[in-house]
Image 1 (tube, rainbow, N blue to C red):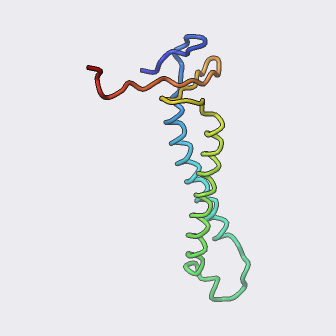
Image 2: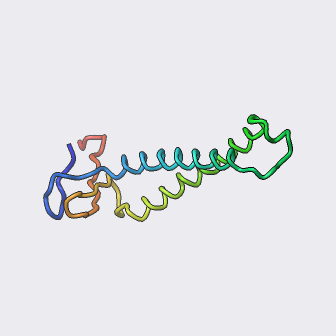
Image 3: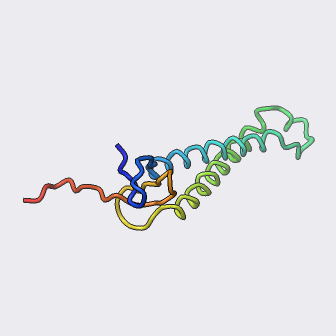
Length: 111
């Protein structure tokens, strides 16, 4: 169960760590798809050998990996600006927009 907001005590909060992981995965997927599409749709060479669909496969793989890396890095940069400073699990209140961290309980119990 998500913790209530520290500012307005609303219970509508979003775990920013989960949102960051989903954003990075979707950014990599979309960036990879765009990179592969651009490699397949480019008509730079009019050589008959390059018109064969499998001749563009290495370009598509390189475009997909480059686009995926660029997409994931772009999302990572955005989330690094939104994350609140400190230790613990980051949360975002959907009611007031306040970002805060809830300290994680320690695994070892005090003696």
